[in-house]
Image (cartoon, rainbow, N blue to C red):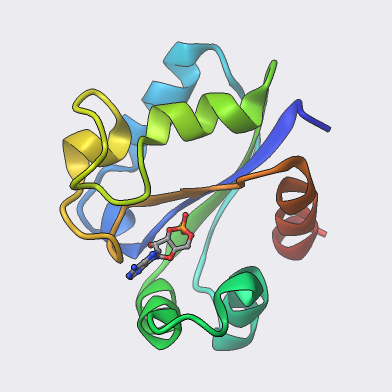
Amino acid sequence: SNKHTFVMIKPDGVERGDVGNIISRFENKGLELQNMKLMHISRDLAKKHYQEHKEKPFFNELIDYITSGPVIVMIWEGENAISAVRFLMGATDPQKAEPGSIRGDMALSITKNIVHGSDSEESAQREINLFFK
Ligand code: CMP
């Protein structure tokens, strides 16, 4: 449903020590943390997660990066959680993300863009199942 979304703090976010800051932003908004774990994603899982990008020129770079170190995966709950999280994250390209958003404040590169959040109800359900079931 629209009440739950999947969020990943990517390897550079974990490595730089931005986990607390990112979680605080979601908590301050009023979203509720439902589940969370630290994990190192296998290449197989990474390819499943990003299957819709498999024909893109940046696919290999994306898989190399997302498997390069531990990530934090989370389920957040709240009214319109999917769009709330996407708004807090800012545009996919940090160069275009508004100051005040997570990517606008904390990232420079479209590959190392700190966080991932589901873009639709369908992908939220798919990603939650992939990482938590
Ligand atoms: P994410 O929200 O995790 O979903 C797909 C990811 O692909 C995206 O964030 C970016 O990190 C990455 N991505 C999207 N477009 C490009 C691009 N043009 N070049 C490199 N990486 C990209």
